[in-house]
Amino acid sequence: MRDLLLIENPHSGGGKHWEAEPFLEKLRQAEIEVRHEKPESPEECVRLIEETEADAVAIAGGDGTLNPLISTLIDRQLPLLVLPAGTANDFARSLEMPEKPEELAGLITGGEIAAVDVGYANGKPFLNAASIGMTNTISRLQTEERKGRLGVLSYAVSAFEAGRTSRSFVARFEGGKARKDMRCIQLLVGNGRFYGGGMTVHADATLTDGLLHLYAAVPRSIFGMAALLPFLRFGRTDLAPEVLCDEGAEISIATAPRRHVFADGEELTQTPVRFRVARRALKVIVPRKETT
Image 1 (tube, one colour):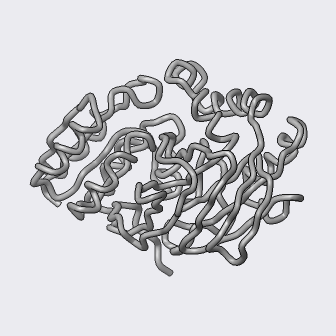
Image 2 (spheres, helix red, strand yellow):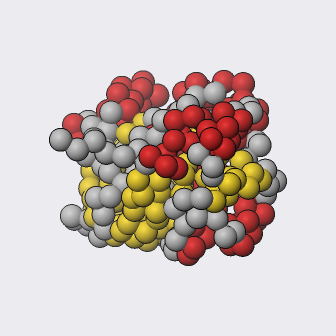
Image 3 (cartoon, rainbow, N blue to C red):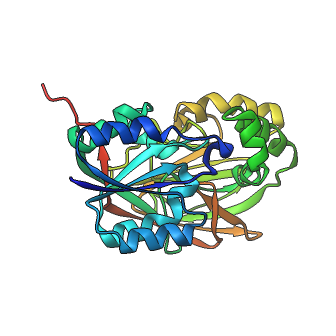
């Protein structure tokens, strides 16, 4: 690769500045030409990707920055280098990306190109996990001011507030291992391994397994939800009491009443919703795997 388009979201991570210069200096040493842009809108990011003649695209931002660009990146088939500059950076965590700018720059010449799965909710793509219920309340509470002030801790504060106000709903699941109806307070359909600032979708989930992983939790007291957190943190909801776990390449969910569906920190659609996974649809630049 000799040419790179670098898109930096100046508002990611609560407005904290990402250290671009060490990244750029490493690339200058490697004689890689970089076009560095700081667009103010997702639409401008899309235009830059559509028009670029670069060999690859690097995006400095969080999951919310990446989500509106997924379709364009897939259409262009340009390798994506994720520069974790957001608050949670769950997609970068799933890819096992380094954090230091110099190490990230080194992947342009020393990494490898892999293809990862992309999830879809009613035809709209997502990278990490789509949620219905309490996690959506958390997303609405995650204001830029709160994220900038508290960082990753903001998720815990928002989760506590959401636990006091979230309402249960009836959900019907189809397309996994079995059809089932149940009353839920929270459910999640995951494509990647991490979501919500480091929570684990499922202990066995990967971005290349061709599966969507589902969990659905029944209504609990705020203390009951707190007791569930360790299972959610480490992706062992299959061991938690009163939690439905399922998986499949396609999962459909209907709820009563209708509910909003959030993914990658953005509202994507509403129920009823059909989830599916597109296998190895997105090219990414990742650390080279060591072989023995």
